Structure formats: C-alpha cells, structure tokens
Image (cartoon, rainbow, N blue to C red; front, side, top):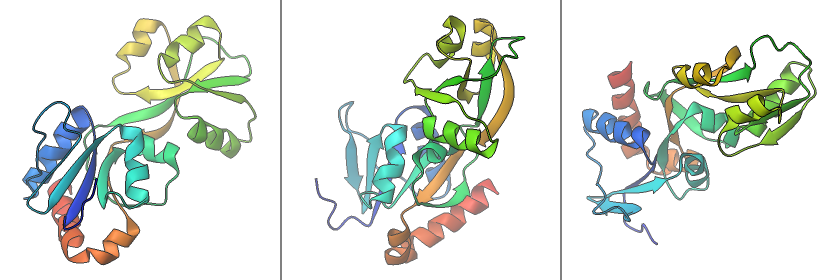
Length: 206
C-alpha cells in the first residue's frame, strides 16, 4: 500500500465514532472519501485517503507517520502513551474511565481488571497504591462479579450496563471524548493543509 501523491492521510476508528468524524469533517468543509464496500479498509480520492482501523490502532498509525492525523477517544490515547499533538477536542463520543466495584465492598484493592492496564497502573502510582492489574479484552464487569478482581477500570457512558450488573462507579478517573490527533512531522511538512483544518474544527466545536 502506498500513499505517494496523497495530500492528507486520515486514520479513523470503525463504528459510531467514524460516522460522527465524517459528519464533523464535512461540517468543517472537508468531504472525506467513503468506502466502496464492507471490505474496503482504506480509500482515497481527491488528494485524501482514509484508513479504517480499530480504535486502539489509530494512535500507532498516526505516531509512526502512516497517517497524518486521526480521530480517537481520549481513553485510547491515555492507554497508548504515544507522542501525538492533540489540538482539538471534537466533543462527541463522551464517556469516562471509572473505578467500578460491587456495592458495599470496601476491602483493600489487591487486583484490578481493565482493558486499560497502562492507564490503570499510572493511576495507582499517582495514588501511592500497589495492586496487580489484569488485562482483559471484554466483559470486564464480569471480573468484579465473579471475584477475578476486587475492582475494574472501564469506560462508562450512561451507567446502565453497570446498574444492570449490580455494580457501582466508585470514582471517575478520567473523562474522554473524541480528539483530533496529528503526527508532529506531518504538522510541519503539511502545515498549509493541516493548520487551516485545525482552525476550522476549533471554530466548529468551540
């Protein structure tokens, strides 16, 4: 795959956030090329290319310069630890990273399960706490229900799923929404294209 001659390469996460990103860019005056079919993972037109990725992969593609910029949730950025320029909070995809436990459980936390182990370890260190962190890829709430972990750290939007599972949010650790991220080298090399886009997006969501 080569993007030679492409003016701007944008990495987007599949799913609802990608649909909202397309709409936001369009409102800012940038019509992105769309997929021609379900298996079309990258598409290009008119000097633009879009990569459809798993959300967790967006920071890597942008940081390593395959994409010039991308859209990704702040929760993913906190976990990724990549050195990216983050100029615009796009506002959509709002959620929070929370510490979750069984109601009434006040025992010391010795083990935490999470899809965000790096972020969780960082939070523990900031509190002077020591606990094992177990990385899970799905059904994180189950870990607290069956005793795999004393607590979990996970994304919460409405809280309905937690209440249905009989769990509670103990503390909000970070708030998240979709962010525009930019490769720092691209910001210099393609300044004439990227800077005006950043300004338009800031005016749009500001």
